[in-house]
Amino acid sequence: MPDEPFDRAEFVTYFRDEAEELLHRIDADALRLESSAATGNTDPEIVNALFRALHTIKGNAAMLGFSEIASLAHGLESLCDMLRWGRAEVSPERIELLFAGRDLLATLVAATPSDTEPPPELAPFLERLNGATHTATSEQDAETFEADVARMLSEPAKRDVLPAMPSGVRRPTIRVDIDRLDHLLNLVGELVVNRTRVSDIAAGLAQKDDSAGKALLESIALLARTSGEIQEALMKVRMVPIGRVFERFPRMVRDVAKARGKEVHLEMSGAQTELDKTIVDDIGEPLMHLLRNCVDHGIETPHARQAAGKPRAGTIRLNAYHAGNQIVIEMSDDGGGVDPDRVFARAVELGIVEHDERLSEQERLELIFKPGFSTAESVSDVSGRGVGMDVVQKTVTRLKGLLSVSSERGRGTTFEIKLPLTLAIIAALLVHVGEDLYAIPLDSVVESQRVEAEDIRTIQGKEVVTLRDTIVPLIRVAEFFELNVARDPEKAMVVNVDAQGRQIGLVVDAFAGEQEIVIKPLSDLVGRIPGISGATILGSGAIALILDVHALVADSYASGRVARVDLAATEA
Image (cartoon, rainbow, N blue to C red; front, side, top):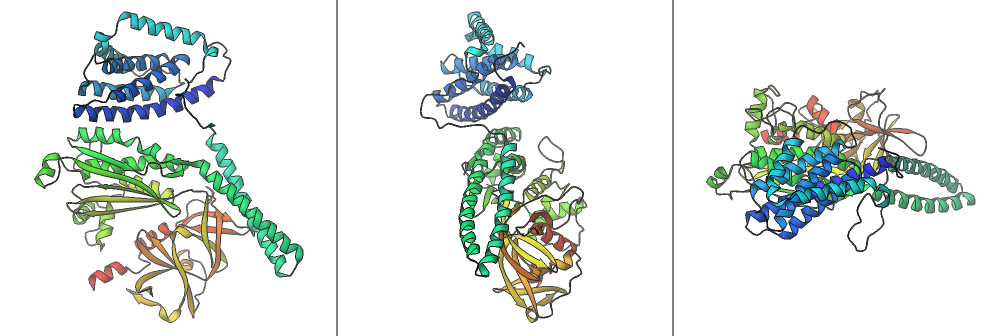
């Protein structure tokens, strides 16, 4: 194309961003149209909204020279024009045509600004679309469209590339590359580290009755407040509503349910709950896997539900909310539930566990997260390949989150995901183990206390302690990491942590206080260390390793390092 008086690459980025938002909106509106048409009471405003969204995509694509996108959007726009003026009935066939066109539009938008050939299914679909709208589309309409495209292409500098938004009060916004925010967040992290360092120096001077040290300490307090506000403001800038992920799901649930001959209602709440954009970008696929699992395995067929005295249509509820410094995502269905014994038998059949392995009911249930596990007898486009649920757990673990499952036969299954609001800066409890310093994320800590040596007992040859009338198995951190540290014969400093509903006591040598820390990933040269999720540099310049509590506990249970208190109680 000839030289243009604007940055084309920048406008293409804007076009893709807006087109993706509009495509999500088209998905949601088409689902609403299908639902209202099924009741015989079609809302004309829904069709108008579809028309406007397609018109916007068509105009923007035409002005940037994306003729395939413009032509397809024009055809779909014509279909909506027929529907809104009553020249055609809102039928299931035409709604399916809208969905198929929307998916093809998404494929074309994702490929921009590539010069590759359009997908082979585009030409046949355009013919099918033209056939559906032929009765209401005249040659004059087509000529008008071609003239509009030619005019917009010839006058790129005289028009805005993106059409003006509807009139009304708008708050000014600016698009910022996420890499710039990541860099800014790293700088704030370094500021937090140095603030702590200066604060420690000032506290040392103040203890010596140094007036300058006391004045410095007061100034540091003001600096701490300001830097804390900067940190909080930056975190809010990175926060986005999880609804950006949720809006993909109604269409997917509808398609899978239809393919499986099931009737499923999806109820969503908490879409405005915010969390870090990095987490939002990564959590979509795991939630998609869980939803597909609920539809394919959880919800029964209409006939089976009626036989069980349930409504024909199953219900899946998806909810998100804040709980402290975490976000909780709950997904539940009212299907048939999961049978732990059947899961265990299938796992034995697949060679995942031995037939004589002693597992609690909850552990049998959690076998669904093992790689290669599947209850499907045959491979389909949805399930049966033994992948999906283990990928969900791996992704949630990588995001420093927790995934749990509970189920009741005949009543349904609930999945719960707990995620940190951010992966950059966290509050941690610092502890000493020998000469080494470790950080334990405060989100996992229940309490910490000193325990006398005589209060430590053994079950199955493994150490336990009773805390608040609860038997808590102990893990000695020094022995887990094979550190050459002698045991204290008189006492044990215990950090009671919660790991997926289990309370475990981590035995350390001393507590070193609480502190905000900046998480730094381990170098590729170091590689993965079981039980360690990263490292941090403290204000004193010392390096502390960050404990991965959940991996540490899971590894200890798998290797038999801790007492199986749950099994001992069951056998008793």
